[in-house]
Image 1 (cartoon, rainbow, N blue to C red):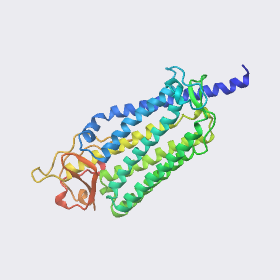
Image 2: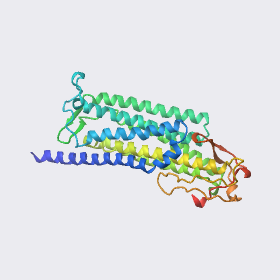
Image 3: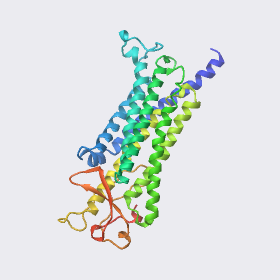
Image 4: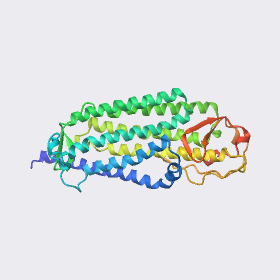
Length: 365
């Protein structure tokens, strides 16, 4: 075995090992986050009535681990050899061991595309609530979301057509690989970035309007969570997307799977946590700020804890009498609250002193 061959083989072997570690880390991150938030999920989402947010939440929660498990099976050493044929096997002899490379190379990216569409849709509900379901915002967000993912799906289909004759099983590494890169593969990462940029821009614009209209001391928790999560979300998603663009643009083919599974897991975890955060704080505001006539002035707040993306969570407030400082906000969040809470009914309205039995002070957030 020549030294030149070893110089090529050894780095490729290290790339495959790194890819396996990143894939396992993505799967563990998804499952571990689900376990951590399971109690809050049951309380905030599981017991609620059926709504769009609930459907999207559980769709991403369930589909992401399934897709990651399929991807890990393809990368795993704990299985027999997959198809060693070059190209697509004929339907007559298509069995698991003959079609596996085609299955894992085609199905996993498609599942990821659909799962990320649901995650972005879930994130979009945050801005729909923030802008009080204004028609131009709803049309803009839905139009941009579906346009970007129709384009992404089209580019993905073109890439899979290209890969149909370029798939090969590499026995030395035990993985399915391609002999080249599809010309449209980079566009799969560029198209959703436009929607991410739109979410970030609309969040900043609303934050700037609130900054001009009210002081920081009167900013209520839900507003701060919306802005904090929006900025954090854009920074993290842009970073992992840029990482994958660099991998596909300049790195060897042996690093093809290095970042895609981690991006999938991170976006799913962030979108689910942000949704739980909004539901928790909006439910607390609905209970604490909108008591029924039969309840005392200081209604007991929700006693759970607010899930957080990164950083210190916002704790429930201890009921206290309102003060001039805590009632000088020009607007606050309220929620349509019957037996359960649905994020789609979140609205903004102007307060009056009699409507505000208590509040969360700035030093508590």
